[in-house]
Image 1 (cartoon, one colour):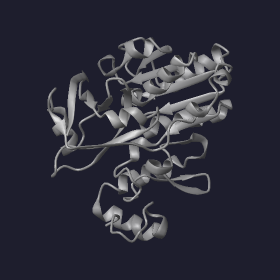
Image 2: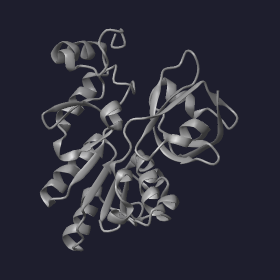
Image 3: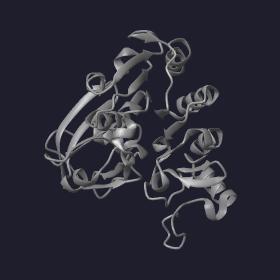
Image 4: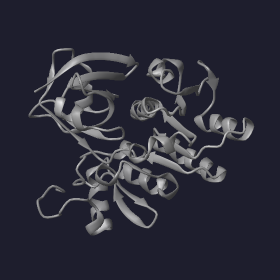
Length: 295
């Protein structure tokens, strides 16, 4: 069992937990995710790692209750436990493989939408710990949905914007990007965008126009977390990839967002899943296709 040592409500319908998982904490890196399962009857849920403490052996996760399982998670308290806590899974951020001295020469911008702030945080924190000060934009619908603001301010140059103007700037994250690049004359060697699919799509359209290399995280479309279900199948350039095993981070300018969002809607129904399975054939899922994991 994996004990919950902190449970906190960050905002309306957004929760944070610290979970004791020493082996995961020892090996995880920014950009990776874990799979949690509450009990024998519960489904497996992939969640991005928000933070980790190798000394304490804890992993921090942030989630929004959407379905039955995550709604149960929202009612858990300190002292409760998960039956399974598997990870780290997925590929780490490409940034951790670069020489920190070379990274110091680069200007990096992170763009987070809503709960996307959670997976952005460990990346900007890692950069800060290695002497790299990045810029970050955090966007939320309203003031009450801005999360991890204090933590982000401690490790990066933070710009907060809200759709309704109830806090800091008013407007979409794309407007802040335009302001920083076009009006203020900043140039970025890399943009990393994590958030709702529609947000990432429009960030990529803008950064392509501005000539800024952009990485996005496709964790919003993950379901199974092992490549078996096919929910996170995505076209990257002319290749078929699976966010949970090949990603979750990819070149945003090569992602077919319209296809990915359409698949996301179809995958919500059994009829839609059956249609995709017939249409996509052998590329429908990323498993072996013989063990029944795609059934």
